[in-house]
Length: 284
View (tube, rainbow, N blue to C red):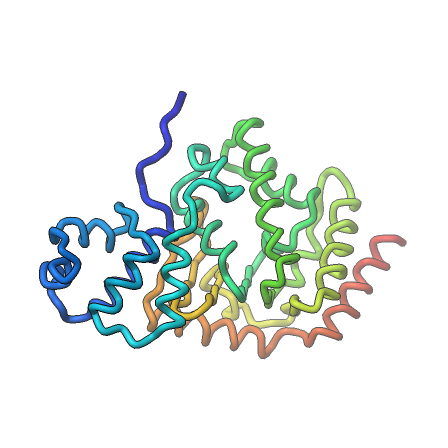
């Protein structure tokens, strides 16, 4: 039986990272002594390799003088959540760590901004489109692993019904794709987009074919926001699951780029009209 990877979960790493932020300029050894700990214990907690209880989060923050009761309560809550009970835990040994991290970040976000320059973003893909994108890609994927990836992508879409706010920028060129298996995949996909566009928590905009190619030239991106005090996370897509950052400047740069693309995309109502036109054309 394959053993579980020893890498700490993203949640535990974020708990440790937030505690490190609150420690500020205080030396780790000094902060550890406030709790009667060895410095190595606090170091492991801050790296996410050692669990801290919710009670100890409150105690440590009290000794550090953290004046943020709501933030401390949220971090304590996250520290208490059991490991291995989320749906993605079943796939921990079957996908890369970067992708696993992204899934957890995405699932816990309160709002998500997504943009892809070529295809329909994963959260909005229909089952047939998901399967087409995974099974027909040029890199070799075994049929067994393809089924795992299909199941994961469909499971991720639960965020749409959880109330998470989603703002998606979809390239119009994706609606002109030609599939060897016929037009049914695209018809179902457009129905999926129209259904999603009617959800109160989803804002969907098409990026017109006439858009200058510099818009979106930096690739697919996802920007995720969270409850206080968690930092925003930006992820730039890659075949291995994306590169994620909390760096304020990098996140801010991608937010500016997303806003620029959104400003030239079709408004929500005109997006629905354009989708309906494509759907009508596929039925003729």
